[in-house]
Image (cartoon, rainbow, N blue to C red; front, side, top):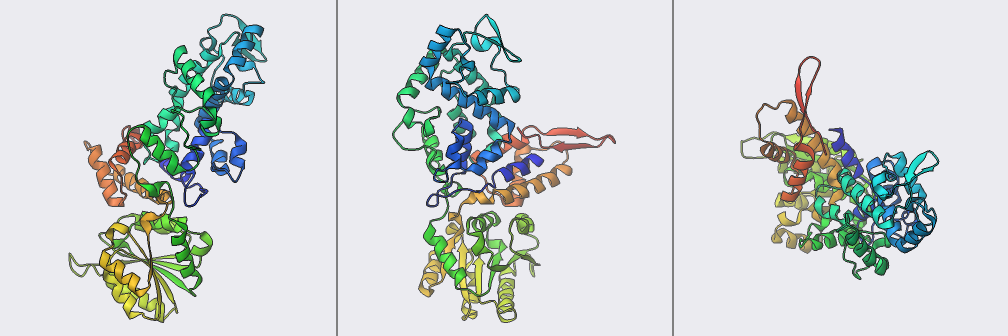
Amino acid sequence: MDSLRDWAEQHNMNTREFHGEKTEIVSLMAYLTGVRRDIFENSAEPPLMETYEKLEMNRAARIVRNLCIIRTAVLMNAQRLAKTVHNENRNTLTIAELIPQQAVMQLSIDGVDLYGKNAGGAQKKKKIGSVTTYSSTSPDQLVITLNKHIADRVNNIKPLFPIWLNWEYIKDVFIMPGGVTREGVLEEQGTFQKNVDRYPYQVYINWSPSNIGNLFFHDRKFVQTVYSWHKDRFTDLSKVKSVQEPVKDDIYDFINQSRQIVLLVDCENSDAYKLSATLQDLSSEKVSKISKIILCDDARFTPSAWRIFQEHVEIPTDHVQCDRIKGNKSIVDAKLIGTASKEHYKNDVDSFIIVSSDSDYWGLISTLDDARFLLLVEREKMGSGLRKKLEEEGIVYAYIDDFYSGDGLALAQHALVQEINRRLSDIRLPFNLNAFLDEVLFTTGVHMSKSEKTQFYSRYLERLQVTISAEGNVTLNINPR
């Protein structure tokens, strides 16, 4: 299960914003397709240097990147390479003035052999240092070899991408159409050379070049464009962009004008993952002014994510659980009101951020008329009547659905890890994996689309591994792809 934690940590990268647009996915793509390092180092460009440095430590990512770097160089310089090979009987890979030798050497270090006999179709052996190679490798034959390596290895980078992305769409970006035939290579080579300025940072990818600007400018542009190539639409914008700055400014003004702030959460009527994402999407300096988070929930009916919520925020957190006085009657709302009153009158808290989409907290707002309130609500759960009332009273509110939801992935993965581990340790055979996943998602409160469930199932559950201890105990473990 460590791989699930690794996945979550990989997706907890810092992301540069362009007017609320995120650049995490395009940073991954820029690295993997071979965009130059200096682009990452330039703070005015979207790709993140943090992403570059992380991926440089990942062998699978390095291999795909260096294969793509060499492929782009060969396509860009095909005519000059062919002339040099013909006139000087040299191997294409050894023409240092046109082929990045650092990429060639790193592939060799990572165990990728581009010098084999099949790479060049040549007959004459040649010694280059300690490496045996073959002369007269043609550029188009080398591209075919590179394409085969990329096709064989591209699935190794699948875990780098979040499960909400359709992997087949992303995978296609790396695969050259007709790339295992000379005719297919020459056609793509011609398209690339004629339109090189329309390719992102002049690196080769599989697309029909169009004048839409930099495809790697931000995540929303890239993801929506890639989906459109497959006659599909990507609509969950919270996965690729953040809330607009005026919304954040309203929250920051509320914080700046407050003396002491407590954040109160009605866990029954709030989403742990969206709240975690919202807090991480806000300025850490501003959020640090919140003195405490108080979670009020039902001891029997609250998603398990709230039990580990405090591990994913840096604000001191109290967890108040309420027992039901009747089987169908929760007292969370009453507890929330009582807790707020205590904080206001006893601890001199002047401002509250309430996280709930339930209108029952209006009694609290009307009771503590000398306190200040800000509401964080879910758009679909907030009624028009409550919205109108808040606006009439001048109470600031924001939709947590609009914040960048990618920052909630770490909490979601942590909750899934715990629940999967718990259930696998007690599982009895036979059992149904589809039902198993549905139960895990229900218990954790993690919401997945049909596509996300399919990808999660494929990546983590499809190949369960049986482990037998020395004592003969049999356990099931995740064996992720």
